[in-house]
Length: 193
Image (cartoon, rainbow, N blue to C red):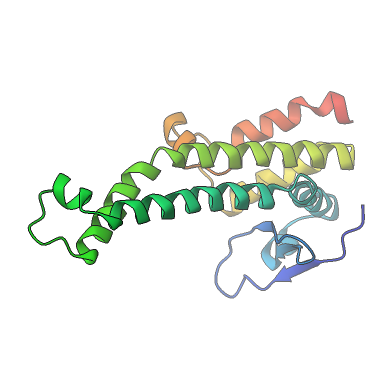
């Protein structure tokens, strides 16, 4: 695999937080590693992290999430147009003065309520993408130890909650809880090592 756009971000000026991420689509794709991550991890761990981020690229996770969110956005704008075009909102909410500002405020209120059930779906898709990227990294590197060690260090450096409430994690966590993720990776040791 050839990756020629890996950048180091000077994050240590703002925080001791460590992170890495993949971003971009088309010809503008890049992997970014925080300088704090580079300073605190060994070469094998950095390779495992790069392999994980490359997994996001190979599995087209950014593109998939972009298409999904833009589809939801287009549907939302269409519905907002339909709701503000007539007086239906004014009638439902018994508004005396049906101005566009009042309708838009109601559309935002309704939209916030309507989009809340999508939050767990988006979090689930993101967690699934993280597991796919973990699998890709383990297959690409042929080992699990460096990935597990890197995650443990990241969790320690970033003060991760190792055992969040499952309901809270299912709604708000974009990554699987760290303890579950490391356990899953270590259970795959026999398949990779």
